[in-house]
Image (cartoon, rainbow, N blue to C red):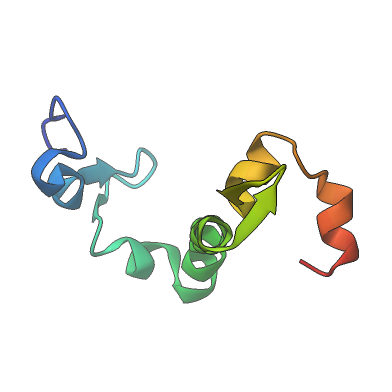
Length: 88
């Protein structure tokens, strides 16, 4: 396993992370995680992160201020049931 850096985000340290499967002992890198999980499982695992990024891109106005859809949902300006009615 790799040594844990003080700051994972600094200088792209997260890219160099090495994890260990405790059952098999297999070492897993960020670049090898898709192969380790399999394409279907990997695709399903990263989907929430893609959704998160898309929600940050959608801009709406709430009480005269522009905000992202992500922030509106996080701050509960908009209820999840309302969003689901629009098929989102």
